[in-house]
Length: 157
Image (cartoon, rainbow, N blue to C red; front, side, top):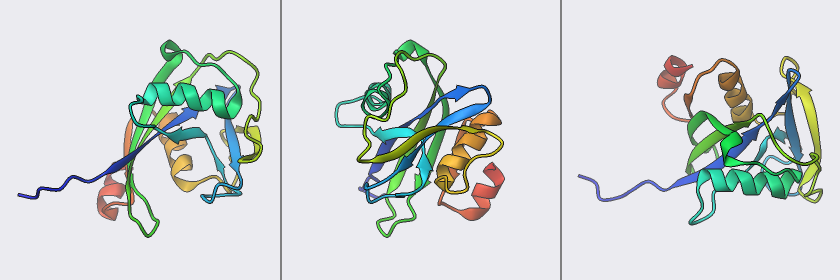
């Protein structure tokens, strides 16, 4: 019996839909996937729940206020990073149908733009696992795995 636990990095992602479009942000100056599109997102900090993290990140990145009652968990992804560290991640994707405030790029030093994209015409430079998660959400698939056993990934797709 092994006595070790695998550390997982938890992150929360926000999906906003409006008229068959989703809000994406273009990363810059972060050292990770700069120049590519992602969702409003961030790591869950110590002693913080996924919900608290999502509410905080939405305020920090887009200037909007979310209520926990307006957040719905729509996808869970367990993935192994493709980076040399091979760290394991638990990504929880929330959908919010309501928010308060005007969507604004609060972090222009880390975000080149916030823009709405048609779900049928997403940019080619969207981060692949984010693209997959959006696809799963649209098709109402709650759970996926990425970066593990390829035959299992195909079976889960």
